[in-house]
Length: 230
Ligand SMILES: Nc1ncnc2c1ncn2[C@@H]1O[C@H](COP(=O)(O)OP(=O)(O)OP(=O)(O)O)[C@@H](O)[C@H]1O
Ligand SMILES: [Mg+2]
Image (cartoon, rainbow, N blue to C red; front, side, top):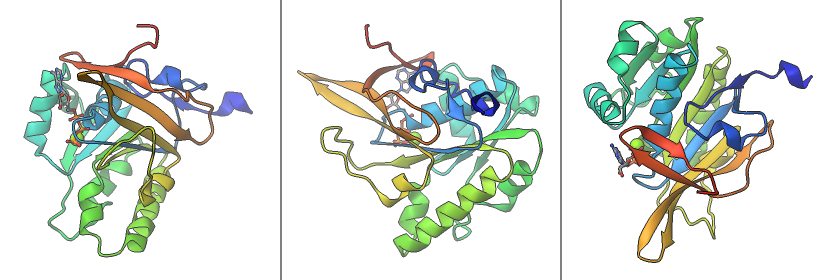
């Protein structure tokens, strides 16, 4: 029955409205893919930050590229005070231990996801792990196993990945794009002498979704999806 499907709000203003069911499907895994500076990390931060602050759902944010301190600083510039939520135990920020070989489901992360109150996990990003993999098949198997491990704990997972280029006219997909329940692409479109930032939902198993390219805006208030009429 449709009424039994639980929806997880994305925490990014305007994004829930792109899905007919009003957000991500509970327990799904979603990949946000896009070029450098497209806004992937901000969407991931808002998923965890607003998930806790607005929806009261505890979340874990795993960063691979920056220190936890730097992440807190960056978030603050975007209007998100993680420290406050960390003190309340609503958010946990951690750095992925890439130096220990590569184990996505680290002991530290496993300890967190076993806590019943943890409902959201964001991994930003999996690309360094992909680069460390010697074979792509092994990488796929590991990612699939990771998705299964996380979602088995009643968690809705958001993962980011870097794309070398995001050509919306001629899309090319990488192996990991096929592994997740949902795929969102972020990039830029050229408009005369400037670029416009856009986001598009490529797939979302279990719900109908917008097929359009949606302009987005980033400011010190965070990232929002603008309405197409603007
Ligand atoms: N306070 C702000 N006001 C306006 N724009 C901002 C602000 N903070 C960040 N940005 C914009 O957001 C971009 C970074 O977004 P984000 O870190 O989410 O990108 P990303 O897709 O994760 O990139 P990468 O692949 O390099 O990690 C910056 O390049 C900048 O253009
Ligand atoms: Mg990033």
